[in-house]
Image (cartoon, rainbow, N blue to C red; front, top):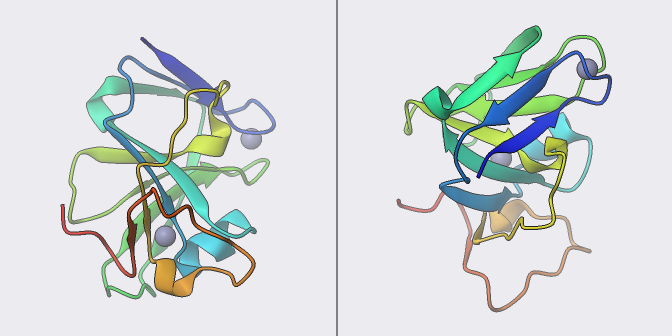
Length: 136
Ligand SMILES: [Zn+2]
Ligand SMILES: [Zn+2]
């Protein structure tokens, strides 16, 4: 089952040859800032399973709550965030699930950084929520 997606302007496109290994929602402040909204929806793939087409710009985000540098890739033309890399999980691409062409089967398996979530956001009691990063 392949998953396709891309940025708003279409300059960046990608195709993942597998289903996501996990999917979740990050409420950290940096994700709020980068996404310009309340949280990031993330679908995690092995980076080697994803083909990217187009030019990705990189912001190396070192001002994080963990102190780790997160590589945030985005379209330099329209600004859509595309994916992030975190040092704790090398080889993984955390794709911003809003850029998937079809999100019908996206299910949040967990929430992280719920301690930073916006006040209006109500989390389902059925989905595990971690105040910071989950230990995985
Ligand atoms: Zn674009
Ligand atoms: Zn985050």
